[in-house]
Image 1: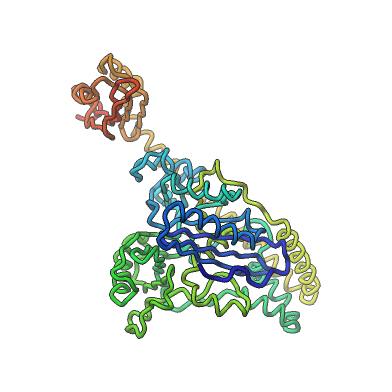
Image 2: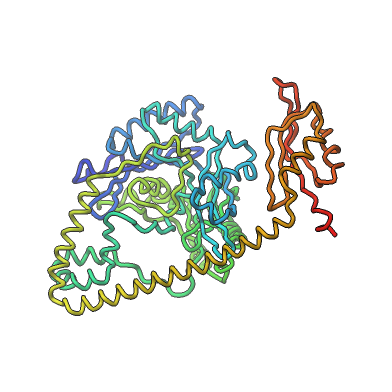
Length: 540
């Protein structure tokens, strides 16, 4: 176990704090962060190697370490986020209708049985909309599934310390949040947006030349110039242990691919780095069509003590494509910089986890079911302080605007007119898209109406042909696909197939899951699906 427990205390003892904890096979890494005036600071960290402890010993050591660490950061006890390794979960990408975005979590739940070897009652999941495709009427959704027992273990572990976890996610999503832009702040005070506002910068320009602190505020939040050439495709790599690492594909701030690979050696030598780049180039086929053009790859390594293991004197072609995490998303005081620099690759993921408790993130995933999640606490101090700063900035801006009032008013009028025209254009585009969507729906309905056999006919046919010693517990009729799904109980489920296949109404009858025996009912439980044959006039 190593790492400083306490760094320089915050000026505001009750300022908002957060803790990120990563659980891996061989270690646990904790990072404490706090919200400063305009930045986020690293308060402290601790790394706990598990060594060769038994499960009972490991849990006792974890609880003892957590209790000691949290004693130093009591203000963060209600704001703790944990991450499981990528190897503990299934990641899939699914297509859902655009209309499902209103409740995409519930819609994704119906896809669990298709993408998980476990039953829906044995897993937890969460999802994130990667992109919207209005031209096809679909959503491209990232779906993460994890065994329920793994999340329940963490929840119960923290309950022993009388703590409710705010969230559980994967190292993958925490890592990707280092590259994904956070959503725009709909409410509240955003100092970065204020500093980038062209009118504010023009109004406060004369004051910034006289006051270095104000000039430094503008410089800190200025947007970095865009690099020349196409933006690189990022390959964030997180070592899960000495034998495995996860490789992710991030482009345009979105995760398009994630997979766990076995290490080719104990240390990241040239052969292993070449192997990572090869996997990354092959995985680029998962990028959207409009992002597949030739773009450079940038592989960024984290998750282990890479300063010690990283090969010295790499070939130039590798040095230009592979690097290690050398800085954290949290500011440090001068006394911390030296001690943190060497462990930055280890602290990168828990640092992004801790930031999730202080500000919005681009990929907000939580594998704790909504019913079990605690309510997120809002920092009244931050809101009041932000409002005070906003009022002060508005007052100073109002005084400065008097120096150049005429030009500012004209620019404001122009901006209002452009904004109005833009809104009108968006309304027209939305109406056009809605008209096209309704036309598609009408065509689909008309086509389905000509082919639909009707639920009553299907039910009557099933009633007549299913034996008396069998009954149904579920009947799912999908008219658009001419498909029926049945589940129920029978003395001999295998005898249902020939009965259904002999019907003139059904075809392609097959079981969708193994036949099981209900010991209580002494019946065989079955699930099957079949197609409805088209009417004779359609077939002809």
